[in-house]
Length: 153
Image 1: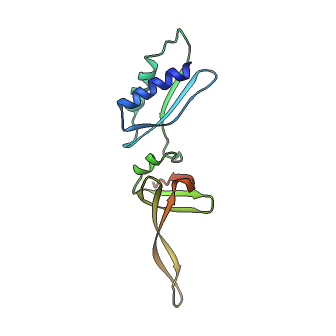
Image 2: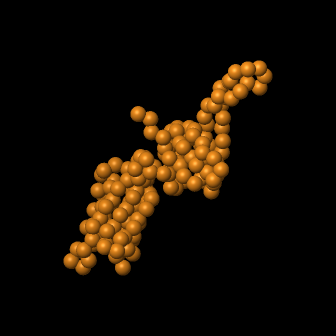
């Protein structure tokens, strides 16, 4: 009952803010409501407050006590949805598939895959020594086990 009501309020709040999208939503047994958001242009504190108010102001604590937490997906959280990749074009990602781990700059995203680029040192085709080569690889969303943005400080 509470979950359905919160879900309806949450969907309405997201319709009013089309750049925001839902990453995760749970209602615990003790009526702890957790909402994790992301946005095409990021999520700021005001976005979290707006969504929180849209839910909280339409629920009655007299009927059912609850706690509500609305947060943004953390910078170190794995990317969950294809929509999250688009806003990270140009950033370095660490992508794990079932067969390999690749680090590279996200240069493109489509409906079913991403494209990473990176430089690698490889032995020269002829002679001794190494040469720097530009690598490029497409990875299907279905093959990605985990992808995280690599933060540089």
